[in-house]
Length: 94
Image 1: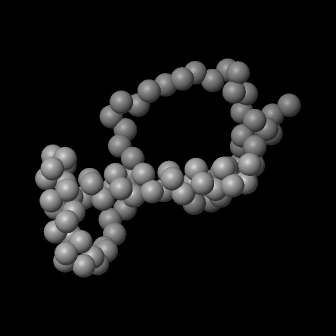
Image 2: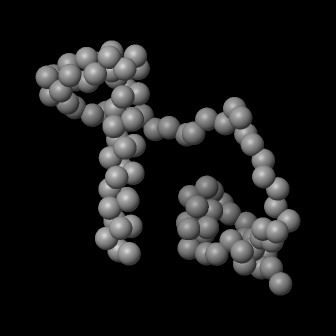
């Protein structure tokens, strides 16, 4: 028997709820269907970061060589490093 999904006052409350529970207690995943949202863009948050000018110049050069914007190159570098750090944690805890 599935539990009823509670009403949430905001996204933060809902996010907190789903992070602490097993969705299988609330949803019958055997009845689910795969859907694709082709125009869905991930939410982004603008931040400000101060970098040494020499580092920024190096980023401009590297980005130019790869034909991407320096902001996209920074995101690529961050994604690679984040993935690497999480992979290290999984390997160490195994």
